Image (cartoon, rainbow, N blue to C red; front, top):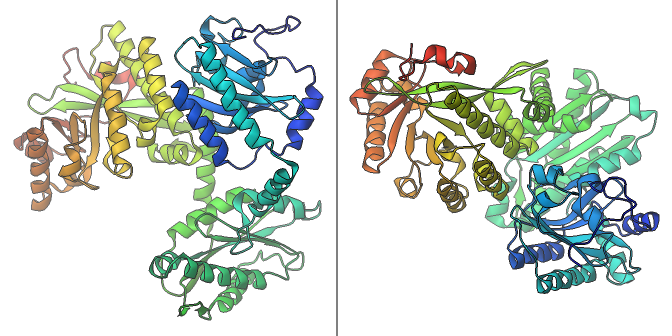
Length: 620
């Protein structure tokens, strides 16, 4: 039952064949309304339970569509779907009950599969076949892990029993199915404002669009109650909802006579109005200001609630766009503009400026090209030396990101990181940085060149990622990464929100052989209570203190205290951003062990490092 073979008539055993009743199977799957449905807690409980019972990294309920595998529920995995061609579960649906792969690397069907050779590095897999009431296979309840293992018959029966629970939850009575469909419809709109949630906004815009309107300009206005959170905290969410309801009513009444209009609300209670009208396209600045003046008048009167009347502080941003410009990008511009608006009293509005729009468009262009830059090594690392203060010899490097975009030119590291965070690519970016630094270190070693530990900047989210930990272990085992050559820098401000979880993850990574530095110390929380709990080897003094250390007594005292604290806690202290001889002399007098900055060297291209640094670590 466990080691089932793929059908013999399949030309390439690594590519899953269509099921013998494929058309019926797909029809049943699409009729179930499960694909692309909202996450369900009842399904997540099952995958969490499976992950715990079998002690695996990942458990999913997967559905096999025409060309994709989509996850109805997942635990331990970030991806929402994969290609059907690489899906183990697309093989499993041919089985009577269950497919078990004890070691995918040893299985001809899977040894070259991208999910085996790359993330999530599957070695062990087991998938119990999920069937509809007619017995047609729609997907699986599956578990997998980067470690090979055997599965007992009792464990197989346990997984099948969990599958029975999942099938019961999915295929309830017809009445329940109708109720779920009705609930899905309700979930497309906010019950307070009757505005569409973001996920349904696009569908409604598509629904009202016509071939004629597809070439017409459109407008979007975004509104935010700047003091709504304060009112909600002071008087309760119910009062906040009363104000939000009234605001939505006024906005919807104001735009009611436009030819095409869609109202939406974001999770942060921002109201979005998309509208167009053939009689008035609002392309002139005069027409835009007049529209917003009238909208402001409609919002001026106090908002009556069950406790008292309120005069909300409301920010409005507006943009008029050509039809060729995707509204999704326009929404991002509006979001950024609302973030920049000051939280003043009363009602204020802003027409999005060309500069702000250009900033947003640059962000989108960076985001669009980031995947390609990561996977095709279009990013690069430069290395800034860290020197020992007593003899000015190099004792390490910090690896810093660089990217020359084909159309935008130089993209700053801050832009790269912000784009990666917003687009969910932070883990991939961090993996690329560590992998590139480790390979460079190995090349220096092979060529007998000067070597020193390389520091890399890694996000707190990545440090907590189980997928990242598995990736590190695999690359260490494969000899690609030598942990002793890598120091991980983490920014002080990034660890406060989930401190205990970050510290636990840091200890696991240290157990693999890596070390940690705390970057930008002194600019954030800077609490000695949490500092003593952090498993760090090096404390970096932020550049903002070093800038003022010569002229400002307070800055000098702060630096001296940080250096003493680091020494007392058994940490190395590094002064970052040293640019003058006076700054160098002062931090050396304070007995700061290491120094980094332009006074000694700018970040160096990898091709120039060993022209600039001799075999003993002296900078030429």
